[in-house]
Length: 404
Image 1 (cartoon, helix red, strand yellow):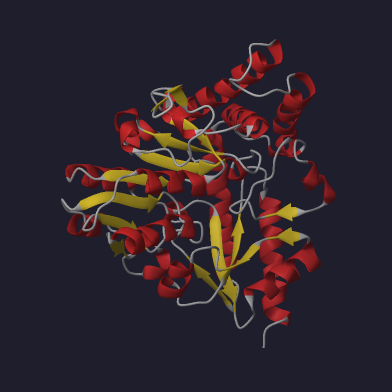
Image 2: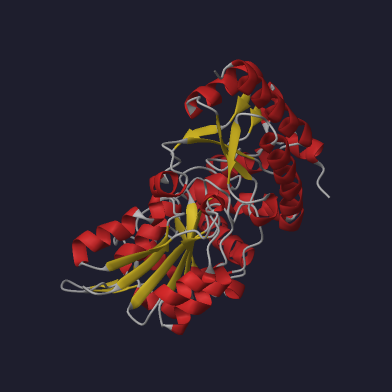
């Protein structure tokens, strides 16, 4: 059971009277994570894997611990399957640019994707002539639910990669990734998961899912910005050429050739984001201490309340499936109001922070919702039922007084 009142003490921003419903974009960062990063700067500020002196040894040890913590968090076989990246986007690009492509290869993705798991495949189409097939949500399309049967029809022996979001950043819809991975592997295709919205909110087990690649960002799970991770299944690691090469990625270099490191270090060229990586490890510790099961249960309760209270307000249109089929995200529009005006009104009138716009998911917004933009409120474990009620009350006032 969550002690939300105690947890909220770790987030100074919340002490300012702000109600933060934009964690899907970027979560808040608790004091223990910040303190762990400051520990690096205050006590052992040095480069990793570059020196034998005690500061470098300590920094290297803490940075390696972060890899191990992420591996344990995902139930990976070892830390050698974890690459520290800048964010989800870099992780997906590492896979997209690391695989060897030829004309006629096929990629299967969906209309639910964030641009980071969509644009990279469009670029491969332009560069190499690969074919892209897109799975659309089943009716009612506004729910954003995927039909496994559609993947069975589309994925074939020409498919090289299936790339799917685990949870939509607009609708919150949770995808059946285990079943999709099974279909992909039946045709010897790789399975990549954009887990930016799932890893922070639910227990994610890469071995249970049996995915080949999984990417997520630290800044959405109480970690610092500029840091995330890419899981690469050990059995397929040799299939991926590093996105960058340089310092730290090699076993040996001769005048005319080089040999890459056999471990995941081959993907971390140059000086890495050391403090941020250590901070990511601290964020994992923080979430583990609370318990992902407790976080998921708390958010399910908030999602249900938010869905029910906002859905009953006249002049508000809510998008996405019922709360039991999604993470705690609510996408909506208020009558004829611009979503940016709604977000601004919530900020000014009630100190409530939400996101508005196309959410880097234009194909979904335009093709599925038939809109140009939407408003989006999202919760995390530090939010309360009282805050959700304040959101619905403020939206009711906006719907009553600002619409025509």
